[in-house]
Every structure is written in structure tokens, then in C-alpha cells.
Amino acid sequence: MKKLLFALCISTSVFSFAQDYSVPAVSPRQKVEQQFSMSKISIDYGRPGVKGRKIFGDLVPYGQVWRAGANSSTKITFGQSINFGGKVVPAGTYGLFIVPTEKEWKVILNKDFQQWGAYTYDPKQDVVDVTVPVNKLEDKQEWFEITLNPTDENTGNLVIKWDTSEAEVSLKPAKLDAVIKISDKLKEIKKIESDAAKAKS
Image (cartoon, rainbow, N blue to C red; front, side, top):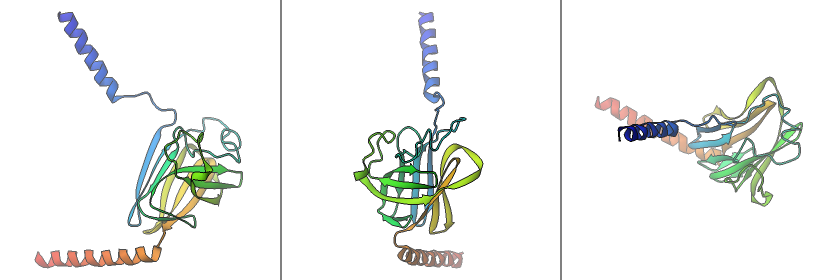
């Protein structure tokens, strides 16, 4: 009986340990969320490594749609309507895909954000696509990376880097003038509240 109880205790301990740990992912999943203008942008994507391979033009063929990462398709969520590289996109979640060539990339936002890779990619589901130049990096980017770099409080760039290639898509609110006016009004309200709090103290 004691042996049985001991075995059960060991089994329970091992099971609990296994729940807390997992085998390291070959292409770890990354989630990026950042304040942008009056809302947020979030990105969920897989990060493959170069691992000594030739990437663009080989592992990622030129002229073919690519999932912009690894495993399930890359998801990007906009909390407000966005001017994405010069084209307006409503607030919502989209699949992010790329069609690379040597000198430029077509960056695509697609309605289907729940597919595996780009195997069931349907161009009829595209919301917008923008073509941007590719820059050569001085230092190799081992792990695929997507970042959001603000240029001011209401504008920024979506930056995509891997191996020796980098591309950027400009981002700003769809109605920038209206957002700036609302932002200014909110700042006025906050100042009034702050001044009132100081007066009470």
C-alpha cells in the first residue's frame, strides 16, 4: 500500500512538473503589443532562425506568398482604423503575409488570420497590399523579427527583419487630423483635472 501511495505521489509530482515545462520550440512564438495613437497594435507571430540557411530566394522563394514568420500565420490587430502604407484599413485582426522579391516586398493584410502557414491563402480575402523597398542590413538578423517603431505619438513604422533584409511599412491613424484634435482635448481635460487636484491639496 505504501509503495502504491509513493508511486502515486511521484506520478503526481512528475505530471505537475510537466505542466510547467515544455519542449523548446524550433520557431518560438512571440507576441508584441504596443500603444499606438489612441489605441494599441498587437502582433502574434512565429520566429524562425536563419541557422546557416539561405533565406530569401531559397527557403523563402521569391514571388510566392509567405506567412511572414513560422507555423500558423502571423496575426496583426489594430485597435483603430489605420493608414497602412498609404491605404486605409478598418480596426480589426488580419493575417499578415509577404510576397518577397530581391528589391521589394509586397506586404499583405488578409481577412483570414487563423490558417496554418500560407497553404490555404486566398487572395480574394486580401484587404490591402502595399509594396515597400527592401534594405540590406549591415548585421545579420538571426531570428525573424517584427517590431513597432514610433516616430511620434501618432505615427510609426512596422519593421520586418530577417537575415540581411529589412522592410518598413508606415503607420498612422486613418483620420490623423481628427485624432490629433481629440488627443489635444483629452490633454486639456487631464490638465484641468491635475490643476483641480493640486488646488484641493
